[in-house]
Amino acid sequence: MSDNRSLSNSTVTAIMNVPIEKVNIADWLFTLPDAEYQRCSTAHIAAGTTTTDDGRPMSINVETIGDALVVQHYVAETREPTLCRMVSISDAITKNGRTKVKVEWTLSARKIDDQTSEYTNHIHASATDEFLAFIQEHGVTLEQAAAARQAASDSHNHEETPNFAASIERHARRTA
Image 1 (tube, rainbow, N blue to C red):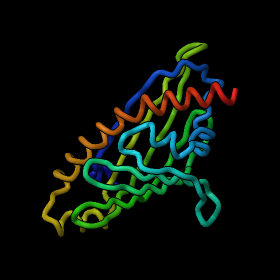
Image 2 (cartoon, rainbow, N blue to C red):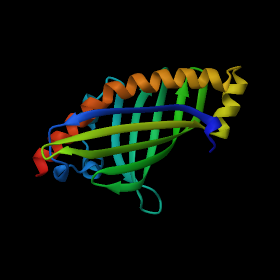
Image 3 (cartoon, helix red, strand yellow):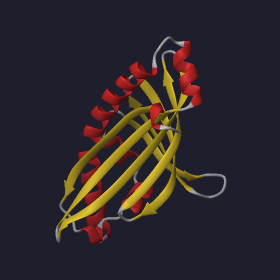
Image 4 (cartoon, rainbow, N blue to C red):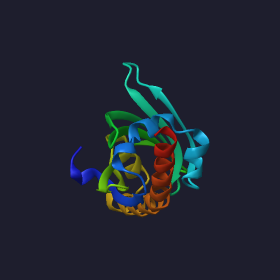
């Protein structure tokens, strides 16, 4: 999808007091208990893992973003200890009905020093053809939809990122 379909682009970082060698985002993400996911944001409803029909790992997340209930079907495109790139064609359910949004979620970590790492949570949402038809049907411009999604995504990302970082840090200490 081209950039002219961009709905939101949010990047938030947080410090983890753990050496980069002990960080394993992929293991954390695919073993994250539902209750722990819920504790990371007031908007988080449920999380679980499964696979695609062809066996690729998938993380299912249910949360609210702004006024939409979003069911995300994140397929792992990259799954490494310090980098997970996940892509979802997500169901967005609003008071006006249901549509689909493409969401790219990149979780990464980098070394700051021997005892400290930086976690980055990057989320980019784009309009699908279905979404474009949906907003047109409801008299909403792409610019209006993007402004609302950007504000909601930024707010959500600022809440969950430090909590994800703390959870990844706890996971690193447990599994070390």
